[in-house]
Amino acid sequence: MAGVVEAGLGSTTSDLVITGLPALTSIFTSKSECADKVILVQYGPAADPYQLIQWVPNECFPSASVPTYSPGICPDGYGMVTITEYHPSSSASDYSRLWKASCCPSGMTMTASYELSYCKGFFENGPITAYRDVFLIMTETISDTSTTEYMIENPDGLTGNMTVLTSATITGEPIVIYWQVSDLSKFDPDYASLLARRLDIEITPTAAASLASETARPSSSPFVPSPTSISPSDPASQRLTTGAKAGIGVGAAVGAVLLSIAAFLLYKRHMRSASETKYHKQTAPQNEQPELVQARIS
Image 1 (cartoon, rainbow, N blue to C red):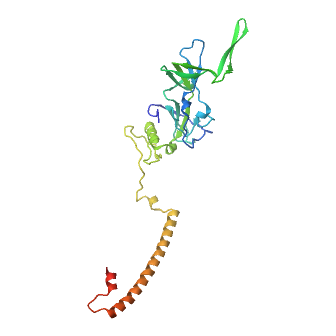
Image 2: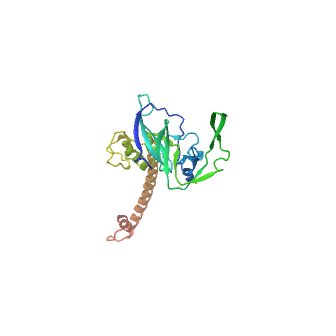
Image 3: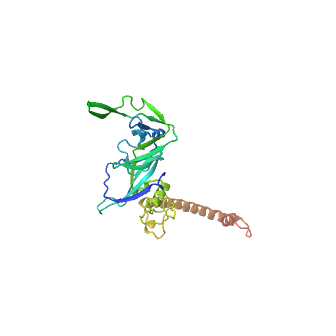
């Protein structure tokens, strides 16, 4: 839930087409070391401060295909830094309200450069261990007056050479997530309520935090999910499902059998009582109540 309240909120009108995004069918928990991998990029021999790139290997993502998921939430160790709402420009769009959010490692913010958005942070309380750059910048002399630079892969690899820094600027690629209005019911109820308050949308008071309407509501009134209640006058509450009817049918049949057995036993008891009462009437004194009559009354 980190960053939901603090994230910058914007909107745009666009018919956003989202296809081929991997679905998150379960909660993803990344390894603890995934947030601590950085690569040292030193621009020139005296670069100060050092530039570090957040290196996130494939196993640190829910899927190795693209760092974009729908619907999704920021993984552990990441916080939501920007939220953009997309409004369709035509009625033909397949969504009514859709949001995009960028997740950055905790303590980092979003910045833009050359039309690219990335996470950026600065630390000066070190130490931090950084891997050497995966690429090396090589210089080649073309002529007496011309040189060229090119990059080659570091033969030592990432683990072949490391350095410890006390301060540096860190940049990294954000994890991008999308969700629609209807996706709130798929999130944890507390998270869905927090998100709804941040986006000024109203959700139905159900434990699953499923969405009912999109009307704006005052942000000063907190919204806490509560169990759904069905009015007795609701026709849906008076209709019985096939399973309910079958259950009633079985119950009625069993009840009829039990009543038949009870009636039969009472009949036998009554016949036996009548016979024994007749016998007692012949042998008991006139002023003495028959024993079975007393037992039957009590």
